Image (tube, rainbow, N blue to C red; front, side):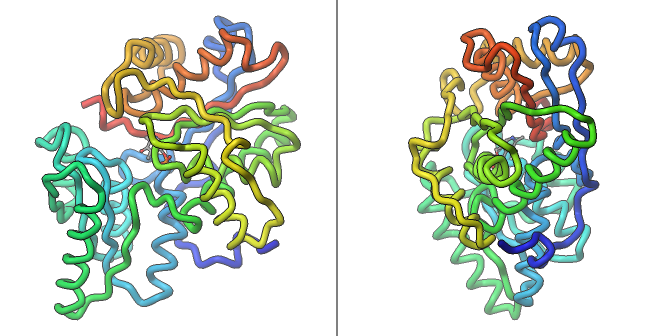
Length: 318
Ligand SMILES: *Cc1c(COP(=O)(O)O)cnc(C)c1O
């Protein structure tokens, strides 16, 4: 198997991020609940996309690219972090966003403005239209003498997924240092790369640790995640193959993507008032609500220690 150091990588994150026990919620739930603070990755407002971008931007730079093009919803954390990382590295970026939901100057659109990001809205619900527009902008940039690198939604390609295989390695190293055994990891599934990296990393380094993804929309995450696990295993040279049935998904998102759920809002309030930590209504609030649901329904066993991955997303509160 390859080493992570065999891949080009730019240092963007402040790593490792902290991993520690949530004392008050653990007490209340009668279970050892730990948190991995990937909301503290150290660029802009932090979040999971920084780990993927360390590999994706390095790959772009190795190919001589000077522009990153990416996409997402109007409030995409991934797009905002792409612009922030490119600012730091002196690269250009264009964010081609779906003009749906909250596209006004709120949340990440305020941050995008501060970053001087080049935001182009596409007035369509279909990613086919969005990718067509990305291709058109890429052609325009090439005609102007630039060399653009295109990243699909969420940075969820095998190379981006490697960032979360490395995060899993980091998690189990921290657990060893703290002399704890993590039996179960719960994370959000939005475009699948984070979950896929954790699944593969748990298989490689986790000694039987289970991983559950809490879906934030009705995409077929079993298929998407399995494909990314196998793709990342291939580029890492790891002898791993999974099927969609091997991927554990909890659908606990309420009415739909980015529509706050009652359970998610309760989880945000609980985390704030018990632990002084801030979750968001689109991803992490629903994921933590899902974790509590797994505990209540006995899907997380009696003596298991569970780790919640805080993937960021704070701007969605505003
Ligand atoms: C993108 C995102 C996720 C989902 O990660 P994927 O790798 O896209 O599945 C979770 N939480 C936050 C805050 C995000 O921005």
